[in-house]
Length: 395
Image 1 (tube, rainbow, N blue to C red):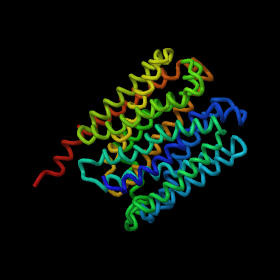
Image 2: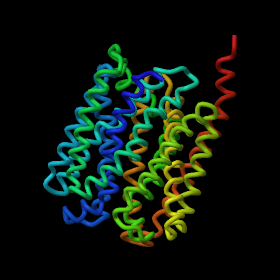
Image 3: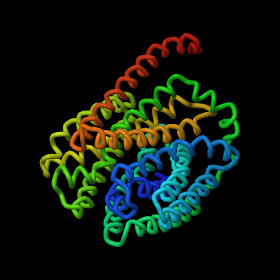
Image 4: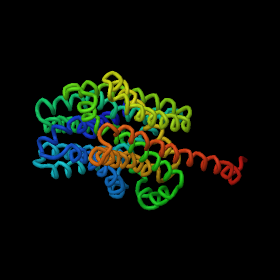
């Protein structure tokens, strides 16, 4: 794998820390800013909605930029946003800063996915995407537990100061290692390709599958710290080490999902969604026993990120052509729309019943819906394949 791919991984690491570290700091932020835990959880929804909003806006204004220039500009936005988070005097300012930071997210991973697949052989494209997303998983193993400890020890603002420094370092690595490229054909994507790619049935169903799968992931993961402390009975200081187990699951699931997707894309999508639903449902009982809870969290991490590279690769395949870059960005936005809805759903379960202990059960039901959409898309693809063959017979 070329060094440029690991430069993308460095950027993904920084973005991963700022996206996920807030989960471990929900209690600290809620106490310091005088809001409820569910209100603090909406900071995750705000970030996710910022990703959704940022994808079309940045796609429209950056169509003629080279991909390297765009990646560097996105890291500048990311760094400024985290600085604003560190300086935020109140809840709503912090929310606005989180939304600003999130603007860089979808375009970075969307453009990065296209760049990553262009750097490797055709039979390694899903693995290349998985390696870039390893930045997110390593962020959960190293960045999030360290950020949680740092925030608990020195105040949650210190975590965002640290992430600001990570953004500066990631910007430097991308500038040094990602090769220069010609001005992209993005203008075609933003004008004609956008409507065309969003009108494709396979792309729409792929995006919907992504949204539903990650509603389940974030309905469970957003409130993992309260679940561990209030249901399982762990102390607050135990949350960071347990997040290491979750992060280890992310790495294994991410790389294994990419490896499988390069060989059997559709079965990997189906299998990962089945595993995600089953593990979340099983965790409803497991969270009442400390050992089983830790094991369940590790398996949850593996199942969650086993879906990422296959779902991203599936949308890229459905969107081959001028709109591929935008479709890739929109799928990242779809992940984060699922994050936003999932964080809201988990909060609704807590505030309006049946309560914190039922969050993982409700979360486990949603990927079943994603599985149903995936089966519809697979069936339609199989019906369309003979028609395509008849329309374009081999010469």
